[in-house]
Amino acid sequence: MTDLPRYLQLLWGRESEGRRGPKPGRSIREIGAAAVEIADAEGLDAISMKSVAQAVGFTTMSLYRYVDSKDELSSVMVDVAYGPPDLRYAADEDWRRRITRWAREISARRLAHPWTTEARQSAPPLTPNLIGWMESGLEALEGLPLTSQQRLSALLAIDGWGQNHVRQTIQMGLTGPVDPDSPQGAYLQLIGALIDPASFPRLAAAGPEALGDDDEDFFDEEFAYGLGLLLDGIEALVARSDHTS
Image (cartoon, rainbow, N blue to C red; front, side, top):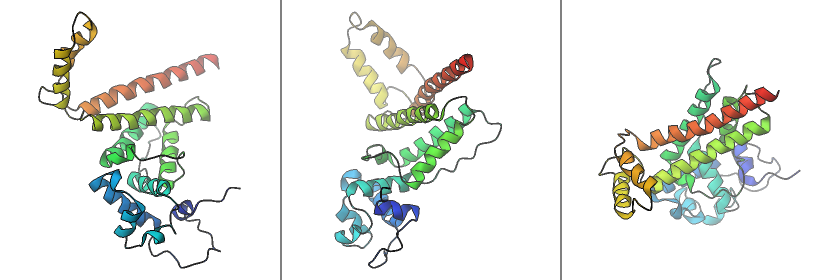
């Protein structure tokens, strides 16, 4: 059996009893919280073993008693930033409502810490909070006539799309309502000035329509539309499963 890395032992409370040396003076989550504070204020580029060690009053070498690499440090800080899921599903709540609440809540955690969408992921989730989010997502899909693998794949598709939606909208400034003074409005006006309707008739027709759309919240409305497409696909998969069973 593969030995648990030190940071996972600490996060899961499974530290080896036979470990020698002084007991850690800080918890692994305190270290993660310090890294989160740095990233929130200064971005991911400000994160290093040295900067986080200094934030908790350690030497850089002392930090290696908790994490062996910056990748492990990244896993810890992302886990702390997400926090545990606090969703409770009602027995009579349909699966679309449940998974929509799940997707919105995890996106809210990412919006609160935008750097989480850029943090390096060197392996699938293994930390407690991220595992908790996976469990909560599968609970939201529970009861559907799908295999466990199909539910996991559906959850991966929803989560991957949601993470990319947060990343793209933040990077391109596509948040808030669409109006002529917004980044979206400026883009639509620029592209309208650049494209030739004879060569790009569909884009030329779509621009004014999009600019005239009185979205109250671009991020939220596009989130709802994109997620709805994915859920419609899952619903179609369920219908096919019912038909062939």
